Image (tube, rainbow, N blue to C red; front, side, top):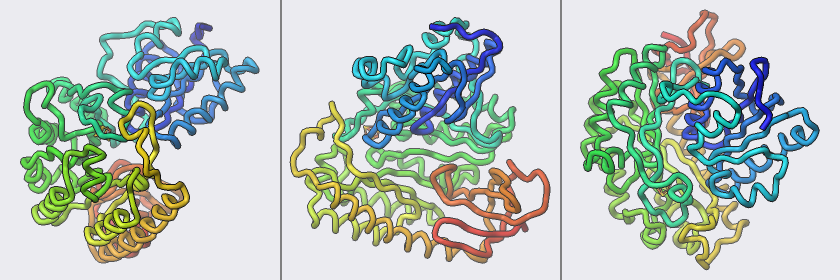
Length: 433
Ligand code: SF4
């Protein structure tokens, strides 16, 4: 490995989800502590490039491979001197990748931070554990409260890649949040594969409600957002925490994956149709303000047209405010990999298109209903004449935005009252009150 000198720059490219982003931020802090300039840019060619890959489903794997190949070319020409690949894809397919992409100097798994740092000739600073170099705007940060997953969903490769669920201890999380708040973070986005499981491994009981309550008391924290809540084992005492605490966003991100009971059983989701409907109704009843985000897998083996129609009807009836749709991706090593009754790609795409257009009309109607209301908006950035922000019902990158025309200066990072005066399918428009 070529050892970077003090004048070298390192570029870290992150693919995949916010959990990967947090890992990149941890590594960037370690590199910076060694006085090396670190960039986080998907295109920049520097002497050392590290790619943090995603290996969850087919499209994500393809994107990671394309990115590695793009930098492999620069490595071959000698413009890049070190090309390192880490993360989920590399953890999962290390031996194949070594053979297929020889331009890469070294492959690492999902938790090889110390090895990467040492191989580059730097010191791994144990005293910096828990510290990160934030790549998000200064006013929000992702907070990973656990690693891995203890569920055994039939289609999912995550437990094989990231291992069993490991909760971080509450004191360590609190210390991290105090530091984040002191740096100006106002919005915390709690992440893990399954937030509802938090505490079961470490404390033998579900501790998410207690953790959220505690984090709300930290000075400077204004919003707490929860990604993702598994429907099986949804802690009932979380409902009053979300409803009664103004700092907890009325935003419930609960991936349901399907509604047909046979498919849910085959997926090993731990809930059936009846239990799912009961849970959604309970959330709607007890937190009428809540916006629900969910996600479904389309084309899971055995999704007959009748079962698909059942899902469509469910989406139509429940009117989720936010919806993600994913084509089923058969993954090696998962229990659904060899299942028969495959749905053709063409049918899957037709179903996704149909559900997307159904969702667009739901989203449009919900947005129109917001006109005339005054909502709290977190201002993320300025673009031309507009400030762009989000309500408590919107997570960064994945949800709607609010566009605000204003000549005022330096509003980014402020939480302001905005009167909504216009809407389209995915955005709101408003004025500062
Ligand atoms: S809950 Fe299921 S889908 Fe989510 S990470 Fe765990 S195994 Fe995968």
